[in-house]
Image 1 (cartoon, one colour):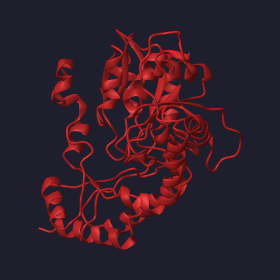
Image 2 (tube, one colour):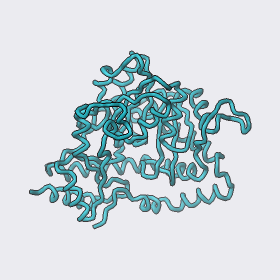
Image 3 (tube, helix red, strand yellow):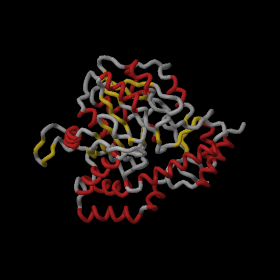
Length: 377
């Protein structure tokens, strides 16, 4: 048995003709930076994010600015919203470091909060206790493909006049109360890293917002501070989505809903085969429809179990073994060792099982059997 954590080649084979044709089109046109595919992807992805699921009524207009990667998307959004030196931004410690790096890059201070033990996302009940006169924004992270409680977060932000920037890097297509993530906050940031639900063939990212002027400023900042070729309104950076990856993303976007549906079916099968095995299964918050970027269980003696699975040919991951508040990079924040007890505990127990659309039912059943055997005394 050999089951990888993710299988991008299997995905490529399923759409090989369309991918090859899209790449050939870009090479023929030689539009490697910018161009028609970039413009069309921005339009199509904004339209995708604004669609409502399972509800009636029109959704607000959304606009999209592509950029070089998901970290840049967060940096650009924070900067465009005026976050800077002396400001504080509330977020979770249970996420990839890019979330906090983006905050620090503006000169602001990340303020880490604990998570809900069953959903792994930020605990909104703790947000108000962390607000100070310097707090300017909240970055909820829709982790593992599950949306945060956006109703509670937006209400807190409204009361305290705070900006909300969604970190949706792992949640393309996930919904909260029938509305897709990316359409709640002042801005939402996406990564298209290859292993994401919607992944490019390299680094890529985007910011989505209902604020058209904000998107214009982000697009300008990401392209050396210009909208016209040789007129630079501000000092910017070089963070651009290339034409090849835009073409790849346009092809994949057409398949995203089907792929997410497959992930949901796989998650349901995992739940069935692992129930009663001794692992703690992931919870789904009422009102959320996850897209299962990762399928993360909690298990005692995690490292021993992980070795046993590897010996049987099942690859796993740990997302994430060392929380941000305990990273050497944030030692200067002087956060006490006992802070964020749920995050600390979860980091020792979580285990990511293989999750990608091309998994078969037989493979999931086999993984469940190996996990159950690994837990036997």
